[in-house]
View 1 (cartoon, rainbow, N blue to C red):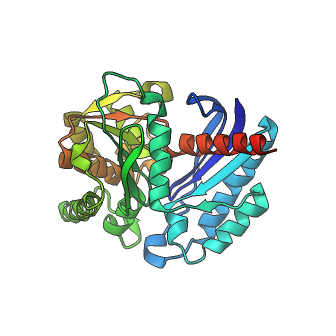
View 2: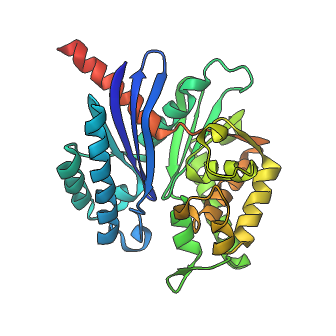
Length: 323
């Protein structure tokens, strides 16, 4: 096994995984897995820049992660940055800050690269399961973008579109600088139209309707699963590989879009950083299920972060063989 550290810095959260990995077998043993809500993408859709306070929140999390990585003795660190930092005109400030703190330059990857890493992380451990038909459609609903990947054992097609939960909330559910609570019917209709247009765009590249199993990743999907199971607290083991029927996703989405901030915050499994954006994230999931006629979504806690760890381990092994 090779000990690696993987960091996934998205629009809403930054996550760390330190793990022992055997790339050949797909075995991955967590040593530390954590998430911090930093809202790096705060206002990016409107301003095109990363806000100073968002950068500082992100750098503070990086300093915490640097200590953990050092303590656990990871052989290799790979830091991947996604939607918000792709879009920002001042992303060089972000790159310099991460390099100073962690000693590695963040890889600001393309949407297609993001999709492939997500697919690898989500499906490596599904290989050989008879109850899940191929091809898979892996859907990673992030803060700024959503990645769609169709594949069997390998990726067949992938596309990233800008319909993440933070972006949809800021674009459609904010008035006078505040999130409408709850959203109006007109706001929901406009958001749904935006999502449907993005799904049309995704279908130009990815044969969404050919999928036989829908695999959903990231916080919006895992939170829907936690609500569906009525969990008393967020429980990774209960959520991982849970299966949520379409009817339950629809009920939860409609409930979230009718609820107030206080009602959403009172849900026991709700992370405080998701209270204002979960309605938009759930609507993205529901719209995808309706588009492809999915009867259920298989929920995975393993996603792009695990894919980054697998790639880091492969690179580390290749480096050893080259020595």
